[in-house]
Length: 289
Image 1 (cartoon, one colour):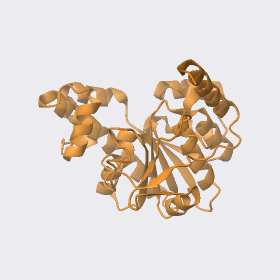
Image 2: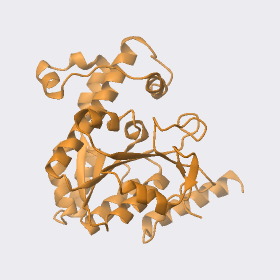
Image 3: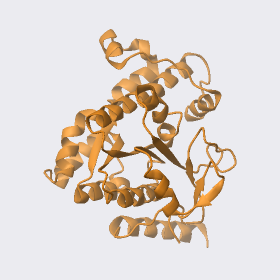
Image 4: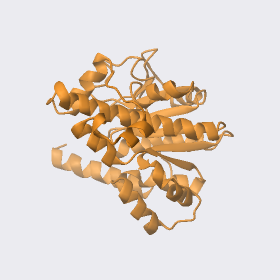
């Protein structure tokens, strides 16, 4: 199959998934990292149900990742334990709009204005938001204003006003070598040292820390809930939000990440990074055969 025909096929599959999401199956290739073996979806779900927080990593524009996330949400929201979806994509200050959306008290066009103020790529996330509304699954805004993290990335945490620094708490760039290498790659190979590296590191840790605090705050008010957290893989892996969450409280959790060759893949993954890996298999990536 030539590249042009493959592109058309991928587009059709993506479009079908968005328009006709009546039954979305999870990714069929799931690696249990500790055992270094593939497991079934049922075995995965059995283990996920043992944890209170589930971090599902993603590449934001990858429709297949969101299909796999939705299949897990769909399986868990029928459980007796109530389910909520934590979102990197929404700021905490937009919580009232999310509550109205899942409470069926906000029309689509009005919600889209709020959504676009927080994030983008609606078509990639559409079915998750529609599902949450239809099923009454609570959604939680975890993020902070992007203007804050941008300022920290440019000029460092100390550039923030003293009042903001006190409210946010102290942020220091203390990461292990693996995380340090991730930050350098995220910077495109530039500024791997000095102030530029330090500031980017502080911004990343601030992001993770505040999302973790907002998550823990929700669970303290709603201890019976299980939360599925949707976040970019650089936040969902164990060095990111989970690490900061454990600084705040002892909460059981699991991490699932999509495979990304040369960063986190079957050749270099370990349990310090993630519990499970969605393997990148086949030409129609992250879809069931």
